[in-house]
Image 1 (cartoon, helix red, strand yellow):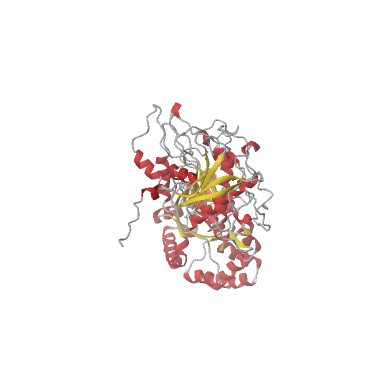
Image 2 (tube, rainbow, N blue to C red):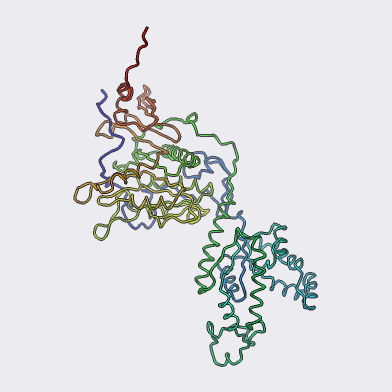
Length: 594
């Protein structure tokens, strides 16, 4: 006989099982443990520095989306290297920054002055032509300089390591010559220093004729009086000549601005060199990430099968009370969640939540496994990373202060687990996937989307304020909650947190389900399974009944569908065969008068 009620879809019991896997409650984890039910290593799936999924690995849940769909992904070693131009007035510190850039990024430094001297010294054809103009006191024509630059850029080291073009182009004609040859940087760095500072730097410079070392009377004085006595002023370092050179530089910079306006980045050069380079390093690192994102190509090797409808769905897997879950069952749910989430994001949905309550993902059950939750998060994050998106996976930090500081037991150790998990040999973690916390200060400009792992309130503390600040900072970028628990909890005195409660609940309800799955049991029990409620975006809610079959197996038979999440009464009525509440409350149809 069917009981009068089934367990509610929204449990009011907020207890958390103490029986987490041994390492999950520790705040310090030396390494992942097999008991966490984490996935095996990715090392057998990827080649180092080259992501090339040439073999379709079927239903392996640990393969990225590209692998499961039979896609070929190329990245890393096939990505184009970084290409940078740097410009700066005399004494702007350009030479120092070039050295630091080469040390950090390994780019090939190309300076037109060095090229001219090298070509003339080597007696090459270009060098001899340049020498004729130099001996005559004339400027070397643009076509000769451009020929030298393009010849150097064609060398193998520049093509494989990337290049840093120093002080070139210096005119609109030179810039256009490079554009016509399809030579264009990823970033055009301009060191910006006030004129008075530049003049002081130049006028105060002194040359040691014996060592060739450059000093400055104020900023970098000589080590000894002996060195100071032999220093000389360079002919170009008089105030008059410096001002003339600055005017020429400004004219040239203005002339080429239109060519590189959309990639020009000004850096304040009137600071210590370490601070200047910190900004340049951040700028070039982001440019490098953007290149990886653009050049990561996902190419189909066979026709994709759409999952936007239910035609290809194979039904709910059986034996869901068998613990631990089999790999096939986990595969099913990872893929089911992934497809629904992808569809929602692709449709422009930005505030989403996934609620999945199978035994291994139900913190109210003793069989809850933190590793299954982490594995699900990783599959989703890597799938979006395969599409070139930068994903930040966020876990809330400690809540409260002093002796009352702490965090929900369900989340204990999750940050460490995410840090230690294998994210693949092609370096997804740290490039396309970052691990962070929940809060507005975690939202960076380069982040494309955010996955929040089981955000939840704790006794006396509320995570919603931090979440709201984070979503406000994220703007229109997708924020996906995985198994959130955002109901208000009692304070330490046992009284509900009533201040602002309506606003908190309203904010929690602003996230729409892109996936929902919950097993249904007899009221107050967790065995046997009576049925299941499932929803995948953009479809409605489907209510299933578990039925034993004569062969000894079981199957799930659909009972009803709902456009909105059904209430407990709606579910009970469907199991008892009663008409829905709305149907019972509807007025009887009026009879036409004959």
